[in-house]
Amino acid sequence: MPRTDSAPLLLIHGEERFLVDRAAAAWRARTRSAQLDVEVFDAPARLLDLRRSVAEVPLLDPERSILVRDPPQLAGGARRGADPPEDLAALLAERAPTTSVCLVAHVRVAPQNPVPAAVRELGGAIEYFAALRPREVRAWLDAEVAARGLRLGPGSDRHLLHAAGSDLGALSSELDKLAALAGGRALTAGEVAAAVAGDEPAEMYGVVDQLLGATPAAGAATLERLLAEGRSSQHLLSILAGQVRDLMLAQSHIHLKGSPAGLAATLRIPEWRAERLARQAPRVTPAVAAGWLHALHEADRRIKAGEIGDADALRLIGLRAAGEVTASR
Image 1 (cartoon, rainbow, N blue to C red):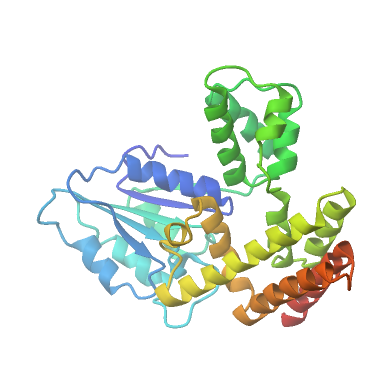
Image 2 (cartoon, rainbow, N blue to C red; image 1 turned 120 degrees about the vertical axis):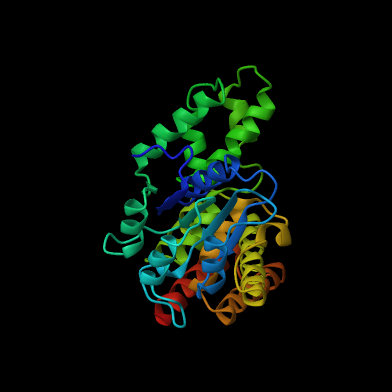
């Protein structure tokens, strides 16, 4: 992979969102612009304003840095009303010598897309982050533990992976928490188990993700497994309701703003959770999400009235939600 320490033109893409975002953050940290902040374009369908910024020499700063996040020209399917990828490739050639450009896509850009070829021809660099396999996630976790200087008791890695799954953002947040807790000392496996994931099991994020994924029935199956493991059904009900509520708030934010920019600040949640909500939002209609929240509240009422068992209520909600997503496709 080419060195990208000072690459004036950089394409970062891949399915592993956390690594893509971390690479983009590293680019921003080392950007050469001394006086002006990085100029950000979020999912620009039309490229006129971007072309103007790329080509013009700034007046106040000898150098300019531009970040372009998730332009539709890099996605697989064509977006109605968006300029074609050929236009994005062409405008890169118009880049002023004092302008640095970073293109970020949370998908794998197809090899036949003209943009990567243009980046290479113009002397730019490309970084690709594929989704990690389970063995690679464990190796990544080991490297991150070592990088933070953490000393964790035997079995701590298994507990971390059980609690946060393969979500690198969640794992990174848990490691940051452990580093603050440790303060340079070693942590026992018991201390790790008590600290990781707090009162909210990270697997619950997987339920909604799976319901909205390629196999919605997997979400219902995960919910069933959590119940079988003895998780508190009332606690799971509360967590699910909170997640669906956040999903609806994210959908509203994206509808009003036109992009997920600023979602984390608006909902006062970590960036990794905002990124997950932004990914989930277009996968279900607001009406279906509202129906899920109503069903969860109604289940809570019926449980407290003794009309239905709490575990049975959750199972029905999971199965119905999976069925609704499958039917909508």
